[in-house]
Image (cartoon, rainbow, N blue to C red):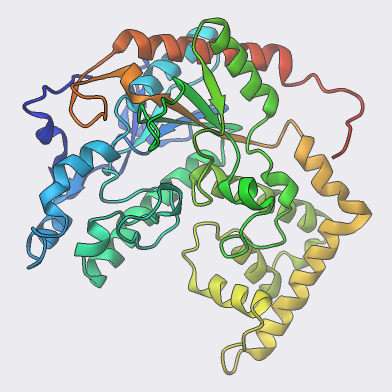
Length: 425
């Protein structure tokens, strides 16, 4: 992976004609795969991915904002700088080395997935929607500024339907086959206050739970147990990784300087995993409900963690906001409400035994984000990380090697060693 000089950094984004791969699979070192193999369900428990190191901006959207009368004044003037600041420089580099190092330890990992769409256009780690100007980092939506300001309705609709939804479909096919999802990100050197950030941070807690000790009901169904939001990954894995890095002189924080956005893939996938598990348990005990349309509606609603279904939104509104059912559909909504109550009773019975067992189960998938400081894995001409020069291969390789070693020790020594009893909180 090559770097860019201070002079030509503006050419680091790629205005693409359609079609191109929205999600690329990058094989590990020494792994030779055909295109068909890359797109198939490769074996292994790990998915490693990057969503903010993409460089592609579809030409259709660049043409659209170039044609707006106020484009130059509002957005395009600072477009190049915004692109550079938004990009997770070095994330792909670390992810590639991590997949390769995992293979060396004997952990099956044939490569990593990367979203190719540039973050300045669309952030797949957020809920679908429009980001207003000057939105705080954790309160953005998928359509990023300045595109959220300059694109018209039709182009925004295309962006979500032809890009966000297609990326989501590809991710779903992979994530559902994996036990561990590790997202690699890079962050700026300094906080807004001017304090320096640690070289690395492991992020495993949703911001909604961190601030309110509950998940926001605006996004996920309130049936989702709040206790499952305490962490999105096995804590023995996160602390094993921390110990490995700290022993080698790499300082690491937890859930700092920020937590997971509620719309992040890690949070959305955890909610999806639980409701999928609940659905399997419920249908195993009540197989007569499998083809029942009312129960199907409820399962589609709670599994709609990307918030892209109008049908699900209508049912959520009926159940939780007490709004009227659409005219002529009152009976079907009443039946769905009764199905919802059945499922809720099933989940809550025996003092929520099902939830407690799932929370501690080794079968519960882990999803975590790993942040690496940009200036540690990429050289910049300035302290604000606005002018990238070249990658720091040695540091990226060191981080990946230590992470892979920690993962291998966790799998061998930690994952299956549970005490006979837990102290419940």
